Length: 176
Image 1 (cartoon, one colour):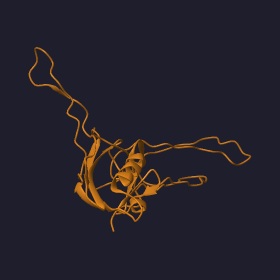
Image 2 (cartoon, rainbow, N blue to C red):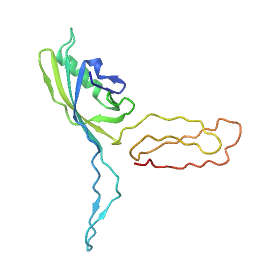
Image 3 (cartoon, one colour):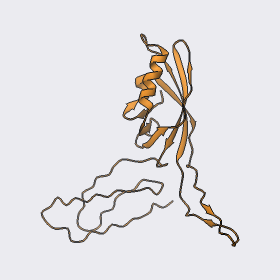
């Protein structure tokens, strides 16, 4: 059974089975064309700037004994409200900061329900695990596995008794 986790709860808790509807290879690029009066053409914004990622997911569930479909719908709606970390079963080492867009319509039957979710992911790229690495004198390469430029947070903690004299951080882009 394929599924997802949202805000730390897996879809299997609600008996939800999923089917990808709209997984994009890239989020849409941002078109930042600015027309300059009296000049030919336009100013084009910087390349590699993207808008939010929007992805669709079809979900269905079978109602467990002792519950009604409307009760399950309310529980699922409560779980999916708000913003949180979205992890697809197909890529468990990556996550998105996501929230639902629109109002997902619910198809209700006697003992099962189905609905379509549309996720808005911002930033639009999958995020990986946090890397913690002790630094030593000299070069300290950190293996970057990302495929898109993304914000990075570097926290340096000096746990030794000696003063840190010189720290140099060099960014190396991953090659194709």
